[in-house]
Image (cartoon, rainbow, N blue to C red; front, side, top):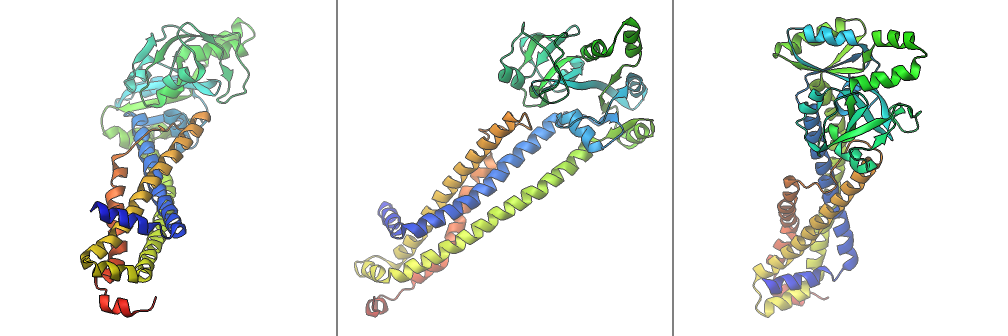
Amino acid sequence: MLSGLRLAWRLLWLRPLATVLNLLLLALGWGAVAFVLLVSEQVEGRVQRDLAGIDLVVGAKGSPMQIMLAGVFHLDSPTGNIPLESIELLRQQPLVAEVLPLSLGDSLRGWRIVGATPAYVALYGAQLQQGRMWAAPMQAVLGAEVAASLGLKPGDHFAGSHGLGEGGHEHGDQPFEVVGVLARSGTVLDRLVLTDLASVWQVHEEHHALDDSDRAALAAEREVTLALVRYRSPLGAAMLPRWVNAQEGLQAAAPALETARLLRMVGAGREVLQGFGYLLLLSALLSVFITLLAMVRERQGDLALLRLMGAPARRLAALVAWQALLLVGLSVALGLSLAHAGLAGLAHWLASQQGFPLAAGYGSLHELALLPLGLLVALVAAAWPAWQALRADVTQLLQTPH
């Protein structure tokens, strides 16, 4: 077997240019399929973790998709604010089990500052790595990615800036104190700066108020950005969104429905990329078939000599099959390496953009299935050339001029 492998390896590289081109074509095909698989699995997994049992997101009138992206994944700007009284109305509904208000509006070097309650942290089951939870306004707990990126720790202070992106006006007269850092949870909390709802109100009231009467007026008109709702019973899915949409200025977004729409849109692009990968594989396998068939025809004299030296016909067929297996096996390994390199590059770029996070070192059990699939495909590609070698007539081969 080892001698057959060595001979197949040498025969494979008798035509180095054809071998390299076939190898690259196959590797690009396998790499495209594996890359799409690695990214799509991570996206779907993170989406499910970030949903965390949230049944409904309530925001200001606007696009439900925008409300869901802003309220659940924190990847978009909210559609506006809603009155604080709306939160109380939601809590009074018999079909509502829990309402979690969120206030957005400021950021820390591009990382979003979110006013919330400790129940928001409990929703994702996150744990503290350092320090403690906030207990008063202007105290902040950092997500793991935020703390790692900015190098902040409990006891440090920072000033938020207006807006949800970098470059906004800093509220230097209203500094936050870091009191805790969350352990990495693999959820949206890793990318947030969490504080009390009152912190957001205090910063903006101090920024806009000229005197005590202004502060009192602003306090009476306090708002939140969004509310995350969990149903008490499945009946809520049928009735509560309609009730919310009937209220003046309120818009309901069902994360399950909007996420399904989002994944369908992403899925269309995924299918295109996968189709492109399979097309590359098909063209590369045709090239492998042609190369092996040409090799059998070009090496007829060598094959006849091997037969005369006592090599059985099945060994010649195996020699052709080994070349296909070696070529495709190498291409799968190279393709997986390219897929992981592409994933690492994409993860690094998304991290620099503070966008949807991906794990650079993520691996999937499904990608391991590409190797046996590739070897099976190699045998299919080698079947006809191997059959040609198997049926070769030694007498006729020796009489054929070369």
